[in-house]
Length: 256
Image (tube, rainbow, N blue to C red; front, side, top):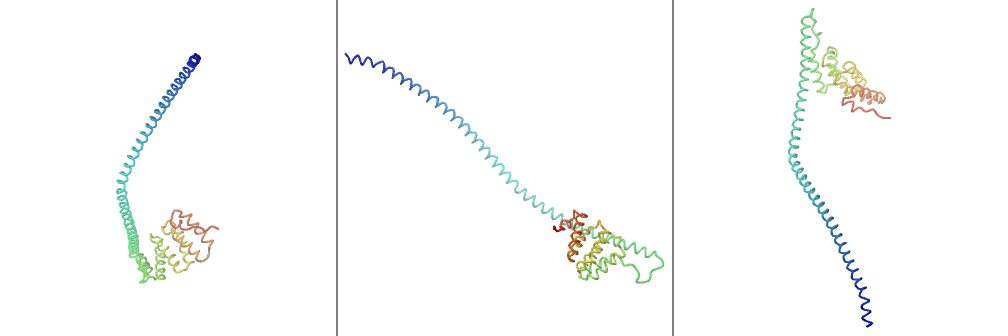
């Protein structure tokens, strides 16, 4: 009797515990469902991102392939263009040489025309000059001077260039003859005479293409004489008057 009564008393407690366990299981099942849903959402998001990355990689690979193909096509074009540039440079060099030859021919023609004019004036003049007193031809003086200079006959070339300046100081070739006078004196280490000749060139023919070189050689002549201050002044004058010339770029004043 007593045992039956105790069993009847414990039955409500057991039912309560079972219900609590069932409730806890139901909560756990709900939590598992919630976690599973969150996991599936994250997995879907990651899957989408991975697919996006794969698409980007495929586009990048396609771009790389396109660039590589373009580079392969550009290579021969660059090589061909380089060859064309080399041919163009060679053509320009040939053209420059032709222009130089043409300029020399024009200068010779001008001297010959001067000779013709002088010859006509001589024929028209009266009375006829005695033998030996005729003015030498400009072309003869220049040609002889250049030939003697090339042959190493500096003194004789100096005399012939000097004669040219004596008779033809107002002709197109005069600035060249004047430069040669200074250049030959410089080569002979006659620096005072060289400086005087270069100064004459710059004063009389400031537009001559030989003027910057003449000023640079003047500076070197002064340096050879140990005249440092005067050499620096000559360098400054060169850079001031002919700033765009190659000689001006070569002439650098020493800093103290």
